[in-house]
Length: 287
Image 1 (tube, rainbow, N blue to C red):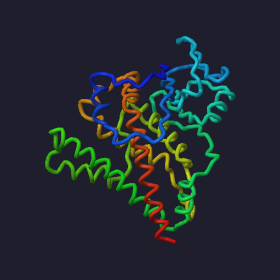
Image 2 (tube, rainbow, N blue to C red):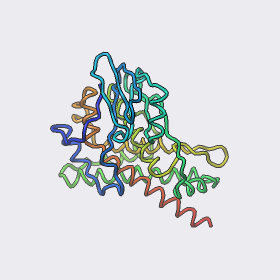
Image 3 (cartoon, helix red, strand yellow):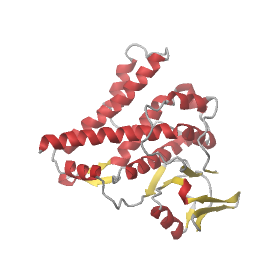
């Protein structure tokens, strides 16, 4: 499957999910013309450079060209072969390439370097010098999960579908304070995690942040993983029960992700704004 489709609202399950994840605000500088490029989980293809575009060739698909200026991120099967020039072109254009297994599980990524440090990244570096940064960050991370859960609960109540007695408390225990578990999607829907990881990578690059950073005492901040899991929680709450069971097949999964992609970008922006504020608050108290 090769797709770089526009973001349609879709119908049925797709439209319902898209409407439920309502964006509280728009990103300040959205790249409206750029879209993710999906090179399907089982696709055997080769990617080369053709001028200012990526050329994708496969024995079972017509040859296609994707202008680099229109691609925000690439989610590709491990069976896709890349020329060195194609990877170089993606990195120079600031496009992360996320690789997934045939079942959709995330394998890894090739990330563009953050060559320009932002004030946010400088604050993060100073924050990570604190011996107690991990505890402070952990508290913020739990608060971020709690906000997502609280907003979802309020939206359900406003729609006349409140949670049953004790159900919310159990969800808080499991999703906010419980250990990080496996992804919320099973089987072929593993493509969700690769897609979310790619989206998180783009958001971090836009903020001038590194996916991984070293902290005091040999500790590590895996910001791309944490942001991915927060976005995953957002979808865990929205795509569940009968709705989740209806999302069968890679093509449908990709369409749903297109439908909610902009809203997830807004969620990523909100998370990073919250983190920036918390880090600044801690640094101001420290000085």
